[in-house]
Every structure is written in C-alpha cells, then in structure tokens.
Length: 113
Length: 112
Image 1: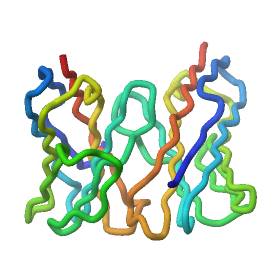
Image 2 (image 1 turned 180 degrees about the vertical axis):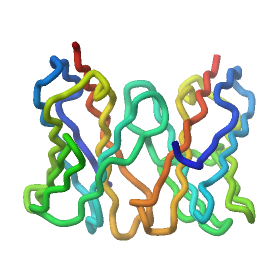
Image 3 (image 1 turned 45 degrees about the vertical axis):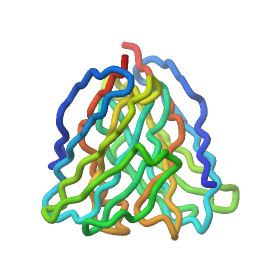
Image 4 (image 1 turned 120 degrees about the horizontal axis):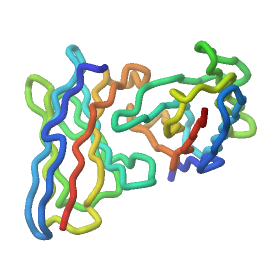
C-alpha cells in the first residue's frame, strides 16, 4: 500500500453542482498528477502540480481546476458537473521527472446523476 | 499526440497458462514505458522500460521493449487467480514531465 491517500472514497453529485477532491501525497514527493478513469478506459491525464504551480495540463476544460499546497497535498475542483464526469479520479505523487517513483492513491469514485 | 494501444482488451485463461499482453505506442521523444496492474482502484507499478531488448523480470512476470518497432510485451507465466486484474501500459515523453499516456488496458481473468 502506498502513502498516497484520497478523500472522499465515493461521492454522488447532481448535474451542475461543484465538487472538490483531495489528495495527500507520499512523504517526500513534490509532484502530484491527477487522472480521470472512465469505466472500461485507461486513466487520462488531467493536470500536474509541481511546487504549487501547474506543470502541464491534458485535454480537459477550464472547469477542471486544481491547487497544490505547501505540504504538497492537492485538490481537484470540478465546476458545473456533467454526467460524463462520472469516473474514478486518481491522484499520483512522485518526485519530479521520476516516473518510477510515481505512486497512485486509491481514487475517488464520482457519480454524477 | 501520444498514443498507446493495448491488445487484447480482454483475455480469459486457466490457472497455469502463460499469457502475453501487447502494447504499441506513439510518443514524441520517448522517455519510458511503464506497466501497471490495477486490481480494484489504485494502479500498482510493475515495470519501467527505457532501453530496447533488455528484459525486466519480477517473479513470474517479465517485460521487454522494442523501441524500433514501438511496442512492448508483458508476459505472465504459470498464471494464478491472483493475477486477475487490468494491466495498463503507459508511456512518458521527454518533454512531458512525469505525466503518462495510458492505453485502455487488458482485462485478464484467470479461472481456477
């Protein structure tokens, strides 16, 4: 089991609402990446944070936003939820440019009704 | 745009069988290819491959990379029911930091 934790584990929201997901990174890791995994698909990169700055973004609209805090924990915020946002949201922490150190958290299962 | 294609998407075998999972990729300025096992939620790291032709092994699992033909295989020998999982292949480019592009995954089911 990795030292990456995520909360909450499950969440049910309705269309149009806003949601905040949280991730605590492995001790010593300064980079956090967020991924969206729809059912039956591989994870898709949303964005990455390094030392509190966004360090790359995937093909997701601006209503997906994030933050990284001085202790390297991170939040993912999604506004104006759509049905297609229903997915498993994974965060992964690592040392920068050390993919072999990247550990995934258990994920947050978001259901949008 | 980086791309990863895995095959087969689904595989059902009996305990003791050997399986080969395939991963082909396109990536700008290849840096590494990684294999993960996903049983319930968190993908767990299996291998990272950076050089062609060098086999990586861990117990009954092994993997090799061909950078000329842009593919990798993951072999599992003497499969056990505990190997049932989704196996994910991902690539990383030199300019992408530690962000990964994943394939759809192969769902492996090992029956007793």
